[in-house]
Image (tube, rainbow, N blue to C red; front, side, top):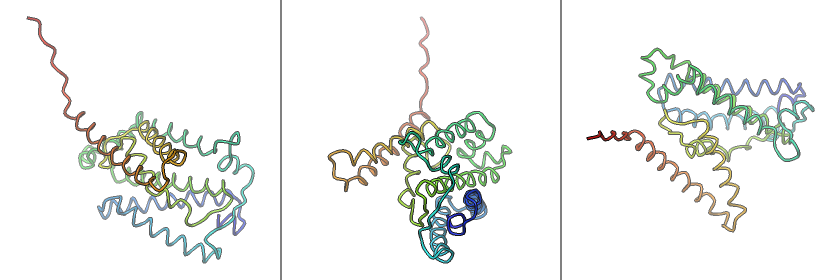
Length: 252
């Protein structure tokens, strides 16, 4: 928004800069996790606050405000920030495309096998010849790219960018994947489960405000839902690991 909205550069420059920044942040996170051996959640949480402060300071220095207007062209608006049929954001279809691409990678490619192997046991994966460092950096860069894509699309959709925009969604992704059956310890999960978890979280989160419940209880309901999902995931995992098929009885 600063490049294309404040300085008037072509919208494609702003888009490429935003996506490039997401890749750069992901690269930094990946390198920090590999070099420091600190849990990735701690590293990304630290860079989250650092980037929030940096974005706030630089926005004021460069544009004089924490909110920057953005006028995108019709093509960019159609591709990233428009409503199809007046009801559905075009980013919904980008989400579906991401589901198909990531699902194919995880289930039908060697890289997907590497990801699952690393989630199960990174040391064993490294001993098996998997380039764990490169895969880790690639995953962090992919995550940063997706995050910057969403932010870029939101800026084009609302014709402006704000420093504080999206802060309420910090933990939504974690909640969605946990509800979808992904273990935070790694090694277990599926794209289909994440899709169902995302839809469940969205339906519950939005549905609360259309019921007779007091909206002040929304966080409590979501917290209970998250806790129940974690307990169910652990229970199902234990059942799956301890399951043994019964031997067929022999005919006398």
